[in-house]
Structure formats: structure tokens, C-alpha cells
Amino acid sequence: MEKLITRKEAAEILGISITTLDAARNNGLISYVQYVQNGCVYFTAAGLQEYIAKCTYRAKPVERNTTYRRSRNGSS
Image (cartoon, rainbow, N blue to C red):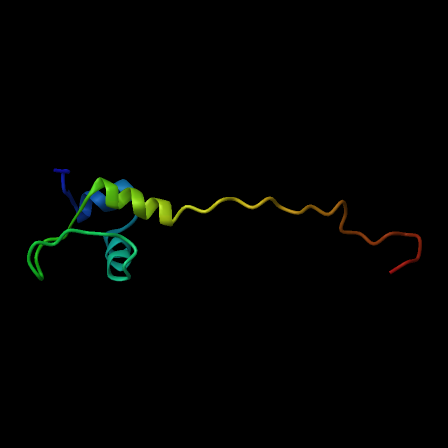
């Protein structure tokens, strides 16, 4: 069985606040374990990895213009 991680530990691992973690949980972005309704909430390492994967985006290459100036040959 996986070790359960508390809200505080999970927020520290992810580098986010507990409020942000709770918002992600309430919006269904991160899976959690709760044995009793209105009881303590726990997370698993696998659940945190899934959340990180959902929040990871691939960088897009920047299109570079050679210059921002208009050409001098008179064309617009």
C-alpha cells in the first residue's frame, strides 16, 4: 500500500499553497483519499504525479521576425 501524504506535505511537494491544492481537488484536477465524509484528506504519490503531468505543457518555439522595421524600398 502506498504511503498517504497530508495536504500540507502535498502542497510543499508541489510548491503550491494549501488553498491552491484544495481548489485543484474541488475542481477534480487531483485525486485524493478521504475515508470519512468531512474527514481528513490525503494524497498518494501517484496522484501527485498525475496532477503534475496534467499541469505540464510543452514549450512552443517563438517565431522570430528578422526585424521590426519596414523596408526602405518604398513598399508598405
